[in-house]
Each structure stands twice: as C-alpha cells, then as structure tokens.
Length: 73
Image 1 (tube, rainbow, N blue to C red):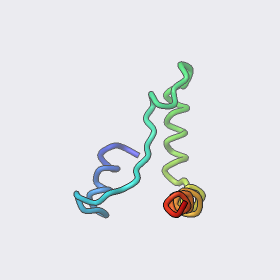
Image 2 (image 1 turned 90 degrees about the horizontal axis):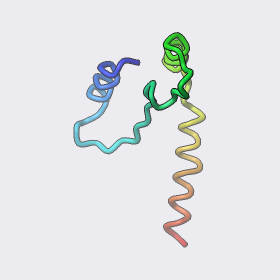
Image 3 (image 1 turned 90 degrees about the vertical axis):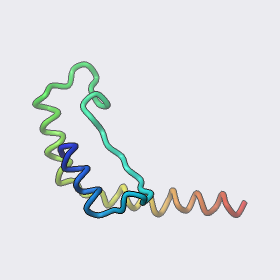
Image 4 (image 1 turned 120 degrees about the vertical axis):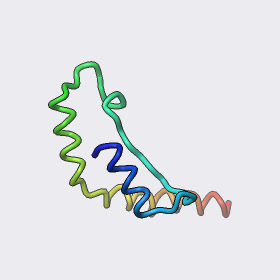
C-alpha cells in the first residue's frame, strides 16, 4: 500500500482525534541488507490482500485479556 492510500483510508474511516492502534512496515524496517526491490514489491503485494484476522484475534483475545487481568490484580 502506498503511504498516500494509507492516509486516505485513515481519514475516511476515522476522526482526526480518534485513538487507533497502527502498525506498518517500510522497506528499511525489514531490509537485512539483502532485500531486493522485487522481493519488497512482492511482499507488499501479498500484504495488500492479507487477512489480518489472526492479528485482530491476538489483539482482542490476548492483549486485552492481559490488560484486564493486570487491572484486577
């Protein structure tokens, strides 16, 4: 996804003062000094259609549960 598309998506579905959890990776975040541009483009392409359901499940089922347990300790 292009940065401009990500910004448009955020602006379309959220208010400017909303709190969100956001995660992104840029080329330099994953480059191990051997990542080619072709490999990067393929990785980006695959994540454009990635189902983040497992990530969402982890966020809601484990992280939120952890927060609640800590709150009541």
